[in-house]
Length: 111
Image 1: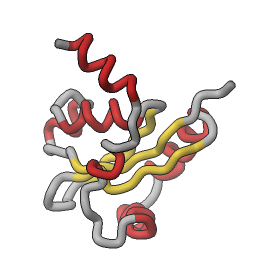
Image 2: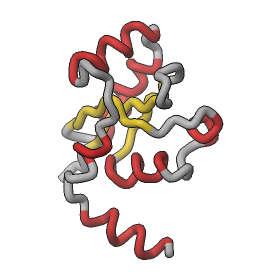
Image 3: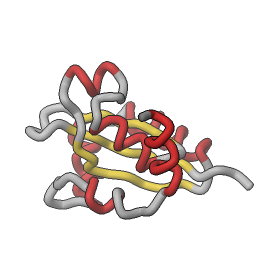
Image 4: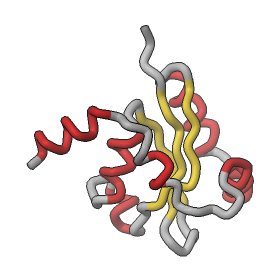
């Protein structure tokens, strides 16, 4: 069975910078970004708020979507975000309740 994947878009609190990423473990990856363990770009610009995410049947499909979105103009990305999240609020509260037990297991191994 193929592993599902997620396309996600993060921003800083002022919505001046956007980051598009892909993962097979959304909760863990966003939690990492929120705790400064994301990539250098997200750390540099304090990008921690989840504005958009979309699940795909396979990680391959999520990667293909990420490649497309990364080529888009900024305005197109904002339109995509607003199609799911019109107020452009941080969706962490929504995804943090998805109940991915691997986050609990993974964090306990980090401490």
